[in-house]
Image 1 (tube, rainbow, N blue to C red):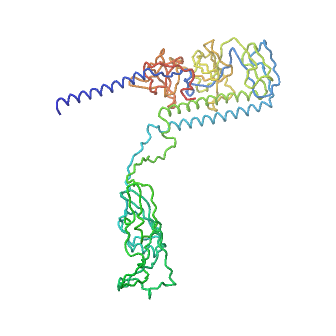
Image 2: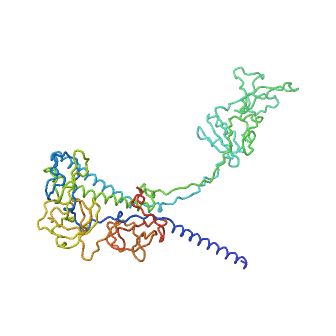
Length: 581
């Protein structure tokens, strides 16, 4: 290579490198400026309720108690607006017998929630087991060689083996007279595919039933040889019992016409009519057929002695090599490779959240059933707080689920948890606990104020039925907290030094590198990478964030194309775009 060529090659390589670098920079700039959706952590937060230090409970007292109408006949409302009531006073009376229907509805709701849980968990497992589209087997391209055309150069009698035969020939193929006589003897049919230069131009069909056994011809006496197989009629007269066969049309079934005696008989010669086999020689179809590259043609003047029907069509080239695309056999799940890895993560996360929501609804349904069983005994709904009745609606004009009676008190809310006797050593007066109220969605802390020494007689879902459960009351620290008296709560006993703002988010929102776990958080109007301290991993789907993230933050799903540091953000107030609702 000359020095000049080397310099030119170096310049070309340098230009390619610069172009690639510019493209990468452009992609990075475009991704950096691509807007990214961020979602409120408080909507993604899924407080874990499976810890050994967690218990079921309910809001037992507070500033407000709302009585919602159930689907049963109301007998009486023994309170009025402005009336002072004490805890335990009767607020509403249902027909106890008809209230049994409410119990049936509660039991049906429990069955529905159990079915939801089972289906959601099944779907989560299903999506976790599916293989992503990125792992789909690649199709394979193959070339099939069909081999050369089996063109026959000569057709012999032994080639005839069945009633209908088919052969590929060229116009120069020799069709032996033995082959033709065999067809005639058997009365069989043969289809000849006419090829020239690997292109099919038509078909020539020979039907053995249409080849005559003999024809009449006229021959001069001196032309008859001793070994000539023809039969001479005496006197040269026509045989009245053997009618002369007419000559066929040349284009349909060419036949050899009988030789006519000359109009003027040559001197010294006499002619005799004789019977003769029409197959006297081998056939070569090039004598009567020709091809000009675009079509086939027949020479009608030369068709005498040929029996058959020819059909021409547009040229059909023979494709010896065929390219096909084949896919490997796969016997796995029919939905494998239908979704990308990102889509499967979203679907699994959505199903996991659906299962968690259904489990919460199931707990609420069981608590509602327990309450309704107490109400069904007497039909009475009693006040759980002391206060003033601020609103009373006519229950006959209200719809199911509507608040018909409101009682307001003045004290902070009190949450009562039910702790198994073996766990009582884990709680103490003055200790802190975290509360998550499912119906109102309130998260807060409370201080334990009382541990009762007499176990409750009620059966609380989620524990060993052989254990005794003791009420543990705690006063909510935040006087402004909004809760609903009677609603179901998750109560977590905090260990010494434990943070109170730990949250649980789907695992798919957390990534890691050599420095640790991080999330992509909205800081101002831009996306930023923030490292967090993690805790419990719940069933491989939820991860506890102990610090570095709060419920007031907005985070992004960190597996898209533009989730980079500095990318502009769009704050979403719901999760519809995240889960494609």
